[in-house]
Length: 261
Image (cartoon, rainbow, N blue to C red; front, side, top):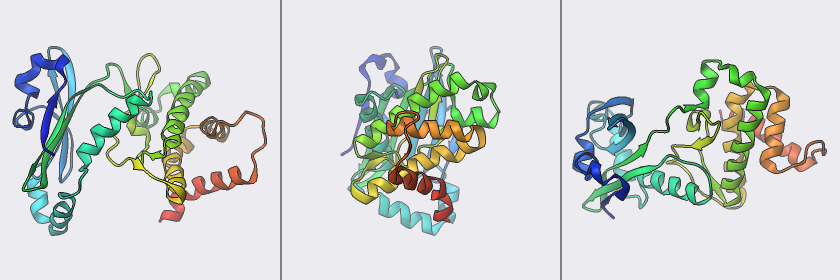
């Protein structure tokens, strides 16, 4: 279904955010560019917004060189839930589950002849926030502050457990997709690949989510802190010995990306 929606609270920005045509005409600071998508940042009345646009023309020159990508695009165009649609649906669902996410300003997509043609999502910037991966790359001193790390771990563990309790896997739960604001509050962003799973597939995807987090954590945090995070995520009391099933799960997480290669 095609359609465009602007949050009523942002009606004064109708000229810029009121239609897909207007959104795709926006000029701003380009942050990312991929064959089928791009993210730009624009500022209006002192507030900054992130505009994620999916469409055939995001990187036309590269797209024309890649026949395989054309075939992939053609196949994906007819899926009932394109990535951009999954992204805004997932963010809205996170909010319902109590997981903090950026405010959604506008969203929607357009189909032509039944196939996905283009779509966009606009979110409001979280002032004075930074993603965890940036903290790791810059060796931020907060990562050596144990009380601060413990505070962030509790929140991330609780949010991951909430997702998995609802049989949902993020599928891209990396440090770059987790923001921390000046009040040390954790926010989840960017989840176009998340979905519901059941049975062995759910267990596999859950392990992948935690392994994604641990991939960077092992470079920044101690083994004790990482184990403490796992206990928080699983709701296990400190000091209680891990049973065989939990030890097996931990080994799977630690080997996850080794086994994938």
